[in-house]
Image (cartoon, rainbow, N blue to C red; front, side, top):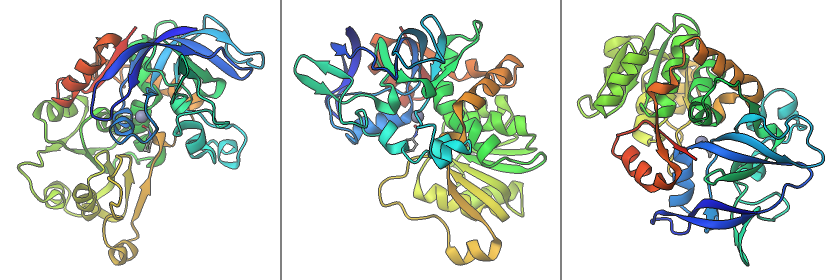
Amino acid sequence: MDITAAVARDPAGPFTLETVQLDDPRADEVRVRIHAVGVCHTDLVFKGAALIAQPAVLGHEGAGVVEAVGADVTRVKPGDRVAISFRSCGHCARCDSGDAAYCYDMPLLNYIGMRPDGTKTIHKGDEHISSNFFGQSSFATHALTYERNLVPLPADMPFELAAPLGCGIQTGAGGVMLALAARSGSSILITGGGAVGLSAVMGAVIRGCTTIIVAEPMEARRDLAVTLGATHVIDPNEEKDLAEAVRAVVPKGVDYAFDTTGHGAVLNGSVAALAPKGVLGIVGIPAPGTPMPGDLGALLTLGQTVRGIIEGDADPAAFIPELIAHWKAGKLPLEKLVRTWRFAEINEAIVAQHHGEAVKVVLTL
Ligand code: CXF
Ligand code: ZN
């Protein structure tokens, strides 16, 4: 069928809105009419570095209404309201133990821009367009996806707040609540006050962390961090030594650090800010070649951990409903992060976000 998609054709250029053709659902596929889609930094990294061949349709925080299902689909039906998260196989050792984010087929099912059999889901005439990104490619009016991507939404959950639960919010909140499993009364440093970092703040509050330090250069985001429960903020432009600034608050170092920046210097500062037995969780995408932060001898001596975290360690089917319950209870005020634009304004929205005019861009259709 004909759909409208925001196509990435030039790593440095804008997305172009084009009429393209989406395959009919295969037996295991679900077509969702997209009503809202968040823009995650990963979309922009994949576009800017052409990590999948262009032309490409990106987008991996879709939400909308199921429109058609393949013959083998049993868990959703047309008319269901859904959020679309990442794809996992559902039958490997990791999926079996609830670690869907570390599915053995995670790269194949999410990052290669095509179905695992090499076919694309989107074409424009004879042109094959990279698609199936995160098993969805939801920068479009419609997306083909899979049962395991989908999380049912209650009638009172707006699509524009549900969409970013699929990646960014889940990554930040899950990173602290599940991956670090931050203890009540503990201290945490969160580097970067974008959507993921601020979701980590909300997660830290939910877990009962009593010292929540956010390092972020934009004043408006530092202010928002405080509104959400940060106890201390650091302006990296003022405080050149991150660890020193943290230790001015917590002399023995923090129990946890959570990095959303991927910057080598920030990562090194975060390790240096850790207490003995402290844990640094990394979700920001580092530039290729960025070394492991810290010093191995110190890590050994102090019993510290540095670990990568994907999608907050979450199994979306279990964790997104939990996040929705926190939102309903007023503990996850997503509306403070989200700003909406119409889908056709995707390029303007991304520029605005770059200038700090929005924390989380969500496009509505
Ligand atoms: C990202 C996390 C870092 C590796 C690429 C995919 N996931 C979500 O945006
Ligand atoms: Zn993402």
